[in-house]
Length: 165
Image (cartoon, rainbow, N blue to C red; front, side, top):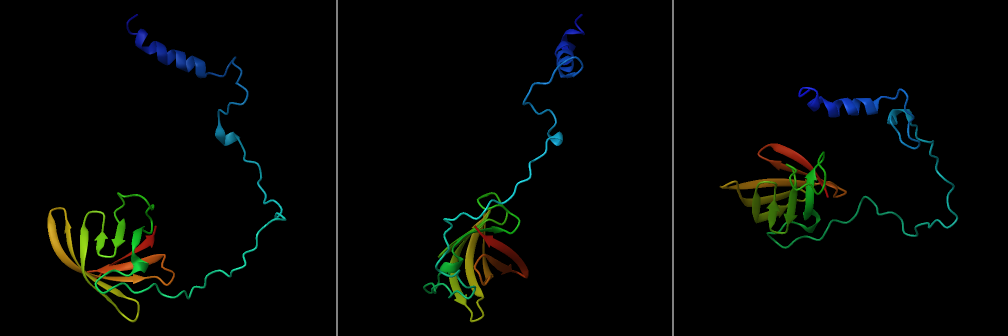
């Protein structure tokens, strides 16, 4: 008898799940694979649809204003992450916040010491970094895309593309 008592709940669950002799409850889906999604079609264009007056912005937008000497340009400031990562995930390996005078990576912070902008759009940032109990200096080459949605950071021969969040 002691050996049967621990198995009693399992036997009751098994008996309840059997369909022989039992009716299914209406409105309860037991197998979602058997359910189909109805065909969805676009509706007619509404009569009150607003047509924009202004043309969409051109790809040749003027560059953002230059930052004061020694600061990162305004067009690069903000939050960035890896192309395959989700924006807002502070634990993402490629998460980066750029302030005028700081680069805050996932596990390190760089204090900007000098910034140079070349005529071809390349931005060179010299920064002093700290992280995980270490300190070092690094020169990063940052190339923003023409539309400002992505940028490529090159560091010691390695290039990483990030998207704007």
